[in-house]
Amino acid sequence: MSIEFLTPEASTFSGKTMSHAQAKATALGRLRALIEVGDVQAAGRLPPERVLAEEIGVSRRAVRHALDMLEAEGRITRQQGRGTTICDARAGTLDLIEQLAK
Image 1 (cartoon, one colour):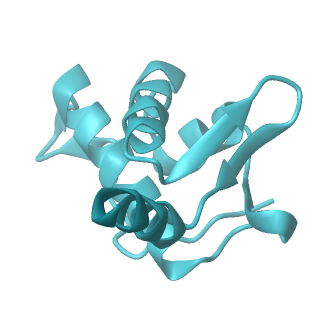
Image 2 (cartoon, helix red, strand yellow):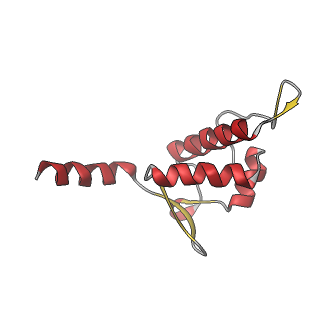
């Protein structure tokens, strides 16, 4: 399984190893791009954390942080044993607008 991202970056910046903060930012940016493009597996599922970490070139810890952020934004849902699925963020926004209009 291979994932192609919009902006391929190596795990080093100008010959130096990426810091954890840089790794988290890289993972978050790449995952956001992947979700926006819609280039995911069947049923809107993202690959496992291990695969994402290898493809992006960051640690699983950085991938987990990025997934936590995306889940907090309502862009994905995660369930142990079922995986990570992409949500339609606009659907939640429409429901919120309807609730606020009442």
